[in-house]
Length: 192
Image (cartoon, rainbow, N blue to C red):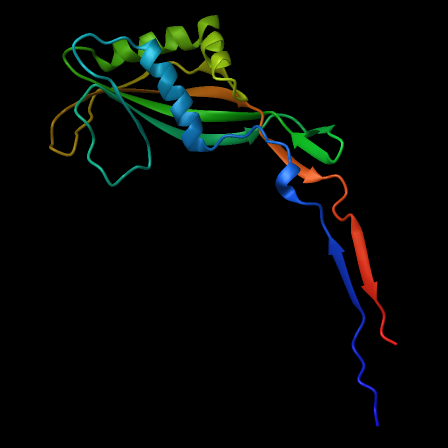
C-alpha cells in the first residue's frame, strides 16, 4: 500500500489593511473640482452664471456661455521619490507637475479674453496659493501660459463663439504606501 503524499506548502499572512494610514492623493476629477472652486472666486461675473465643465464629458451638449472647460493634459515627475516611515508602513511620494488646459467661452456680457485675463492675473499672484492652501490638498498653483485667442470657433449650432485658451501648471505631491514588513508570519508545511 502506497502512502498518499501531499506536497510541501508555504503561505504567508500579511497584516490587515484596516490600520493603513490615509494617503494624500487626488484623482484628475478632484483636481478639476479644486480648480473649479478657484475659478468661481477668481472670475466674478454679473448677470450670468459661470459654468465649469470637465473635458472628456463628451456625452452632453455644451452649456450656454459663459463657461470654462478644464482638461488635465499632462502629468510628469519633477523629482525622485522621497520616503517617510510610520511604525508599520513606508510612505513614498514625489513632486509632479500637472498641466491643465483651460478653454474660456465668453459672451456679450463677459468676453473670453476678459475671463482669461481675470483668471491669469489672480492665478499668478500669491492670492492663488492662499486659496489653494485652504483646500488642504497636495496640489499647489505654479504659473500659467499667456492667453491664446482663437478668433474662429464654431459651436455645434454653427454659431461663432468667443474663445480663449491657456495652459496652467500645478505642483502635486501624490503618496503611495506599502507595508514595511509585507508578511508578519510564514507558515511552512513539510511532507513526511
